[in-house]
Length: 598
Image 1: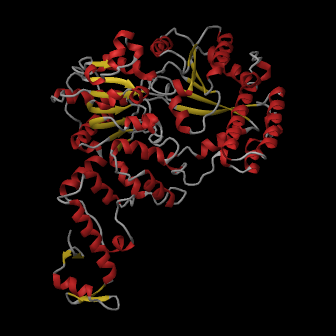
Image 2: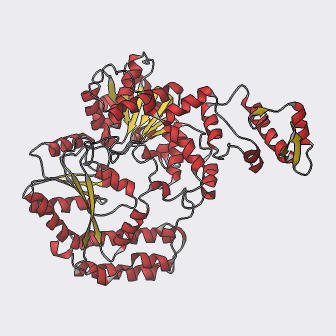
Image 3: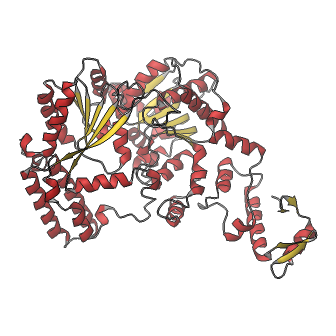
């Protein structure tokens, strides 16, 4: 810490003159300068306090928080401090930050022993960045767009650590159960010398599994990498008691809810290095980002309460968050498929709205449901009201899909659903071109009717994947679809099939019903729009005119830039919190638009 004027050190006599200044001016070295003794004293005391608490120094994370100016329970405090003092990085820190902010400046890292892959330039940059981050002991978020090869970059990092003799402890990869087979296939393909073990009951006999639950650390002995699931980290204390080298979280948006049991369990894991993989570091709100960073670099973004206060104080349009952006940017590496400087040989992706009318039965059921909601919502409040609204929102979406989806009568007659009629038109065109399609729905119970309906249109059976599909069967379904003469369509639930799968044989993606945020839809779309795709991808988003689906579509459009979406619970009303008038306006049926020709 130094006392300076225009960069030149101040002597004790100069400082004393400033402290005795009256009228806001002091004569220093023959010239008059502005001075406010009280504010100068407050600023000096602030930094003296930090100096005493820091001892011999501050951590790199603390230094970066101070430099960012983000006052999240630990940054520079008070107007006097910001007005009369500032921070400057020293030579080592400045060089380190420059490399973190521009990963490509250091050039490609040395070749990775044991890696059977020709990395693209941006992937080499990613590997070098990961190695640099782990050498510094910093948690890293690899947030590349879906399909840019996050898996192979992580495998290269693990191989590099193995080659450097980092084998005293195995690393742990935590992933959704549906992606275990994916990781195994990628390890066998790109890193066969990496000795791995999958800790999951689907991969072991009952006799093998029972003792491993109590001694996960012992089960990992002799392996370079152990793969398991979020659910098992929460269930098995032995996983949380073991000491790991790198803990990597795939699809890390799984820990976006800090209060969830699996999030709390993951944060108990003991390790030397932390790494997360996610194409959606902010899925709904900035609180998602806080929870991920609470795992990566605990304390960097302060406590959840302090972070919430900081975000809430910022303007609703996201301005005023420059300090936060500066603070987290060095820890996040984000590249987009649409950036031609990153990848130039990926085909185009075109998104179109497939507008659907409502069949008479749909319109009648929808209108009756709106009237019923209007009657019931008047006399409810609190949690009961929220539950009622959520139930009706689901009912409206089911009616828009097909009356039978709500009535559960099993008929699913095509003439009773505008969406099924529109799906036939689209599927017939796809079939005539001998192309393949992915069809996403958020409802597991709809996968069967869609499978049966599309089989009639294509004249061939298709495939389906949902939350009830056994983990062991998923890899086989993907391989079957990816085969040249494989099934022409694949029906998936967005939650179970919307991440981690490589389905590049499809050149059409159909969102039969819509999720509330664009991140989930984009993640599902990118099962087809990813490296390996040779055809242009056409994305069809079904929207029933004149219904809440049209309002949902407008909401998704307004949230397409996630940085400008919901800011840490800062005030945007959720549907369950709308007043009665706004809610009924949101779900109201516009018969004129609903009956428009498709």
